[in-house]
Image (cartoon, rainbow, N blue to C red; front, side, top):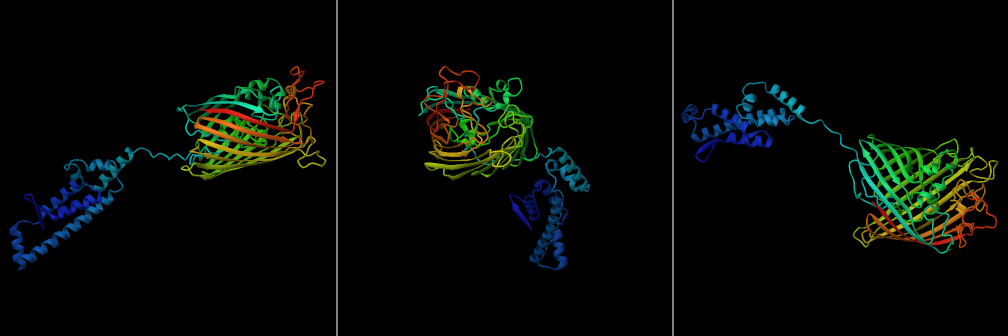
Length: 559
């Protein structure tokens, strides 16, 4: 049976073979050539057909039908043969395609002219495999990169760095505030805070310049601290009074400085040594990252940094385990002979939930008291319970932090009223709720918290007559059994026209059960600091109050 087109005839078997070949992905030219060759070997002249019809004594129609069936049977057998050959070659790619696209004189002849087809195919497959690039492992997901966590309290809200290179990502921070204190201290000095230090003045709280270095799995971070932080943070570390080399001067202008290595194991393991942020108390050391400028006592009175070794392990992209081997509780050096140990677990199973646990222990963190051990647990949960970017009120979230700890030995005990001595413990909480408006252009945060810290070992010492954590002061003692309870509340409004800047207005109310906050008379002797830091000055009594109300204006920048 033939189909006539444009003056020449094409057997239908050939057309069928071409269609099947195209459907199976074979090279149509080579298979058509084979089909044509096979078709030419079949009897096709009219005398042969006439002889056949005479021999069988059949009518022309019957003879034509029989011939069609014969050609179809031949075609089916040939198609099955071609299918078998195509299946044999189905695993070969690359080089095989090049062979099939070669001229018929080389490709077709080598495959179908009585040569060893299997051997040729195996050789071509070997060549193709050697030409293919080596398989590469799919990189594992970056930890916590599966969702946007810029809404978290304690996290910077910048989504993209202003500048980034293969080797270095720079970072610049500025924090300038003006605090109006309703107590109007005459010496403009505010005590009892690790964020706010002067009243009724503009002050540069922090100027930080640095960034992250990263190349060939080697990593390092540097962040400087100029401004008030360079004076106020070191004075809260009593370990600098032990030994020589003036540690508070050595580290005064550095908030972070560490180096380490990233291992491509699981979803990453980082080993770093130096000064790094602790995140005990949830809030960040840098006010730009926080929902409020003045955090509650649970954050303000717990460590901002550690000096030592840390190992971060990410078994999945949603979970982090971090271990610490450090000199002590927010200290540049050791308070005694024993270092501190700690760990952090951070779990973020989805984009709206974050659970953080920090545990610290073993450390002997009271200067000069060798047998007193500190234990502390800090645990937080944050939930984004509303997220509608298309609405005027577009997002809402809350954070809850609960802390508990104690000291034992050296004349104190965790539970008190025992032979070990009076109770020396810490219990506190803080709760904040934040609502964002108009595509995160504005935000309002309300919150507060409370603590109970008998023994006052985590109470920030007021800087009366220049007192430091190492010197102490007779005007506000921190002896075993000394009571201290405090609470606070705040309301914060943020205007954020860019991801790199925040204009902040905040009101704070703070209170304690003992006189603690700076009053109108101030906490500086009339003639300035007199004698050794924190010493008794005859005829001078600091003006301490049980309450404090402040209004704070701040401009916070992070690149």
